[in-house]
Image 1: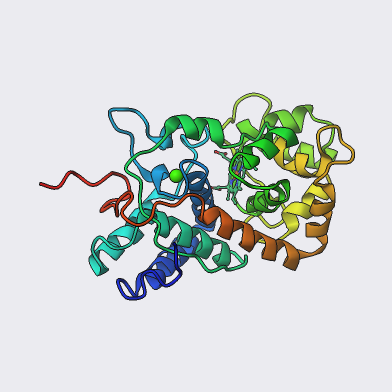
Image 2 (image 1 turned 90 degrees about the horizontal axis):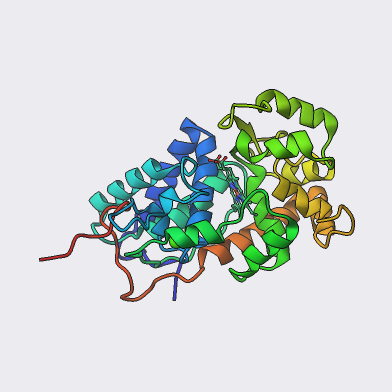
Length: 303
Ligand code: HEM
Ligand SMILES: [Ca+2]
């Protein structure tokens, strides 16, 4: 249904415009590349890749922006809004917000040194969002391998794809509240690393202090994230689980982490394929949904 050439006739400049907007935003602030990648992930895991994540809350309180994983955490909305308004000036009512998210995530990863993949286009935008699904279906950093595996299985991803997509944490930042327990209470952590992180994340207070997932190359999309896991330097519990497994031995995912740590090309190739799959999760097509005029709200009823 989706096609990479979807806008070739209707808005030939669409891809270049998104690319330019992402490039500018990432060069303003490297972290924005990570934020844009995460926005697409949090969109696709809830109702599919339909830009539901971008809708502001309404009087029915279904907005996903207020879910536990998203509130005070997701960023990049302004970047998407700016790209959207440029596209509306160019070709009114043509390019969906869901497609902008998918392409922006791809361009952001590439901008930070990651792989590039072709994004099939033609997703349409939802007229609904789901706070409930956003709360229940997005994985939490306190999950064990079992919980991560079932969260991904629910969305049709294998445990191998879980390991691959977790490489998204090769870039970006995480708040102290999500790794405090790990750096103070867990034993499968490098002691020097734990002490370093304790400087950035005190035992009491500082819940919102930020730290890089990948302390080696925080804004370069490479395989250092996996190398860190080998050294017990994963910052959040869920990431370290990919190497250690539940009881510390014989994790079914350990070999894959080792393989990515040794072979960056393999990681990048697998990541591109897994992102392509993620970007195609239950899209709205044909006459389903709509092309929003503004990404943060559904179109007003036409009179
Ligand atoms: C496997 C389960 C996952 C868990 C438990 C998880 C959890 C988290 C948490 C807790 C944060 C920080 C939120 C905050 O501090 O406010 C975060 C950030 C991030 N996540 Fe994940 N995540 C997962 C999978 C993914 C996937 C699949 C991707 C993309 C392919 C991804 C990309 C990111 C990025 C890029 C950031 C940093 C965003 C920024 O700096 O603005 N995550 N994640
Ligand atoms: Ca969605």
